[in-house]
Each structure stands twice: as C-alpha cells, then as structure tokens.
Length: 158
Image (cartoon, rainbow, N blue to C red; front, side, top):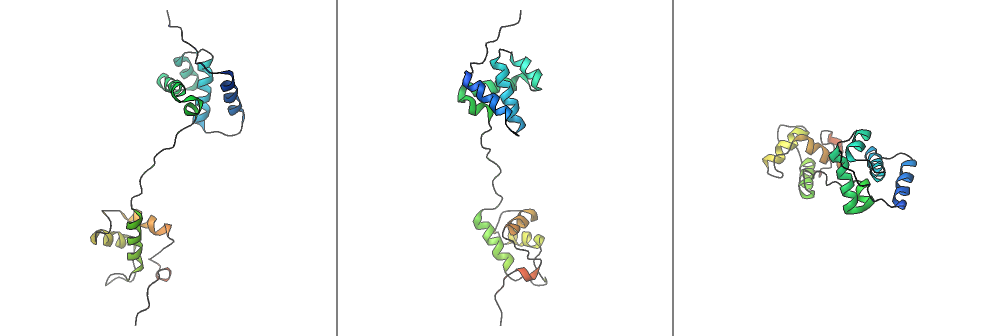
C-alpha cells in the first residue's frame, strides 16, 4: 500500500501569492515550475506525481519543498545570486596591457595586433599565460583598437 503523503503546509496567503505570481506577465520558466510544484504539493500530491506532471525528477520536487521549509516562499521560488566567473585579468593587469598597447610596437612591426599583445604581455610577465581573446576583450572594454594606429595615443617624438 502506498505511503500517504502530507500536504506541504502553505498558508492561504502564500497560495494566493503563488497564484497571483502565475497570473502576471512573463516569468522565467524555472520560477513558474517551482510555483506550480509548490501549489501541487500543497494540494496533497506526492512528489513523484508532481514530478510527472511538471516533467521534473522526484528529487527536484523534494528539493523545492525542502527549500520552502528551510527558507520560505522566496527561497523556494526564486533563484539566488550566482557567483559567476572571475575576470581573467585584474584591474592592474588590464591597465598594464592597455599601457603596453599604447606604447610603440616592437621593432619590425608596424602596429600591435591582439596576438602580438598577448605574446608580449606573457613574455614581459605582465599577466600569466592568457589568450588573445582575453586581451581583445580588455582592449574592447576601453574602446582601444591598436591594430588601427590612429586610435592609439602616443607621445610625440622629436
């Protein structure tokens, strides 16, 4: 005989808040699915039944219920802030690369290329081994295009 499941103890105010949330505008799909899962669990459905209805796993539904019990409605429905990836270059390293891009190109070169900048920055140990894409993004953020000599500011010689 299957085990009888206890409904999730959502208050009437929380149920109303979830229904209102689902009625209004465009929401991220994850938010909608979590809200629906909470409402179905509050109606007394078991986690596997809710999972089948919403095309989730039973464990996923149980995790939503657990987040509700630990942190309330806000924690269960909405996602927390994600840490994201650390920048490849620090602010100091970026400034050193930009200073290098604004300096005269090496002998035998008419202008700096992104590949040449990446190789020279690693050679001078301004930055640890980084690729050309990291250098390109750093220059792009400062609106520099050293391969177009007219955009680079250099001191007058002579």
